[in-house]
Image (cartoon, rainbow, N blue to C red; front, top):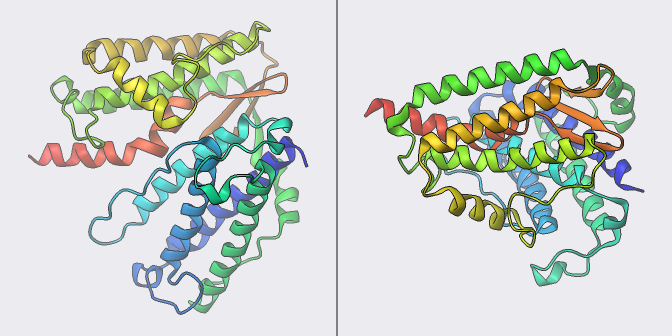
Length: 334
């Protein structure tokens, strides 16, 4: 096995997780979704949470970061909240896998918990993938018991279908998608309005200004890395101190670096970084390799490296949009 093979197999893992959700979970009543079961982890909901949390937990150990917790439940059907969190879990896993190199497969990066020290990366990756297959199989049995007609999750069918899932995109298509995403983003910022940009409480103590600064910090790194690759230069140093590796430490640094800036400054910076990204994409040669995976994931390939062109929009959607829209809805009712 090599890093590319693990990336391929995790594409299968993510595709089957989404099929399970889109084809079956969304069709259940909430009573069926939460119906207790004296089998494995319990209800369909509990099985999904276990599958999701196991992915998040192991990959957080590999990254040296604290796992991101599912936001507290509200009243009633919480599948949208779970789906949004699961999207974030997948995004973080994909980011780790995108940076995975063959030599890393035999490293032992886990420091905590103590019992997991000594595990090499390939063992963890294989365990998580096998765990996912096991629990999806259990879920398919539970769904069948609930009267849902299901299909197999055979890997070989994914191989046959994957060529149709990953499609070559054009530069013009990517530019149009980026411009559309920016229009939707600006519309949301207009809805929030300047008066609410620095109000805390959007996500913990963070304000919308803090979230914009956070998203911009990560997007800035993608843009700089893509520009360097196109120039044939090595990976540039990150915008944060190079000794910071854990996501939580990086996020804390971005927060501290921007906490005394005004919302106007942060927004101007975010727009500037987006314009840099747009100009970089527009400067790509017409034959550049651009791949679209599903409706919302675009990767630009430079040699053997791939770069997520929609970092800000995908990051926001997966990790922050649910919190922002819930906060905004509360604020507009007050």
